[in-house]
Length: 130
Length: 302
Image (cartoon, rainbow over all chains, first blue to last red; front, side, top):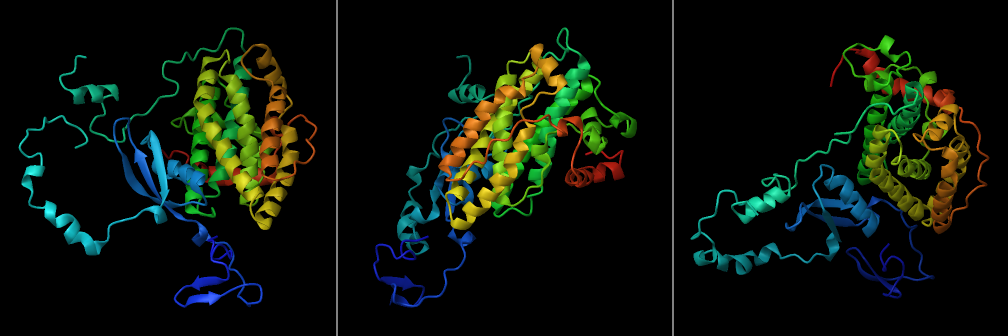
């Protein structure tokens, strides 16, 4: 349950979707709280490291009631075929992502810097994980 | 280092699966294990013991499988199915061992010759030929009761398998060694749910306490040795289940306390009716479903 719904640090003013802040408190009639449902389980993003020496790779997402159960669920959903030696989970809410609107200023400048690519080296055929 | 490049060295260190970031390796649990029945052991006893432990796993697996498409969340459905699959793996090894020492009951008379012993035992025995405990065959109840039963069953089985790793029968010892990390995970997973549900909302607490109250009497079935277990324990092959009682009670009491649940009085151990082949009508219904496809198509392979 969020702090706002529990009457937490916001005190007696709570944001309700689309309607701005409304007064809340013991004297203000409110609708019954809906039953706890799946929507209360946060979304987690899952990262698995396949072998020592490789990086953690994003493999998917899942819902879980808390961090520990998210690791368990990740183990059961994403490492069933001997894939992993390490699992990270992080709440999707806690990830700050670049915005699609910023795509050009962020990424276009690197498009023509050919000298930044290792294309002038020969890569041996048996190099794995490239 | 003899490899030409550092990459070959890395690849070699990881078992030659360099092109696969996630690996493809399988471990054969009984590779290299001596399958000879140990000196002085009656194969009929060894097979009967393997049936008890194999049927425990098979029946609990089938109960867990009943949650598939019914679990409260997709994530938990996969988790319960994974626990079930681990148990199915244990059941296959144990039933195959029972078959290999000639303990097949009437199953081989009914099963097509082409199917392996483990399948004959699973699909072509009647209910009174099964030797699992009453704990695993009881209906699931709600999710709270299911995780309480899984906690109790995996605590018992983990305590047993940890000791069975020292069995004089190398096959039993190898099966136990494979099972210990699996059961450790099952016990941990169930305990985490019992903690969250018991110490959760008033409704989850009430339901989980009801689950504890329903499961506790079934524990009476688990701690009295059958004649087979007594003989095999004396021979260093089996473990007397009475030895497990203290550990199982300590584990369950600790989890329930932390979950703010009340442990009912510990039941007085009684000879297991399940190990003698006496089962409830619930089990007959469960088994009929488990066996329906194999009995309808006796020569099917998959």
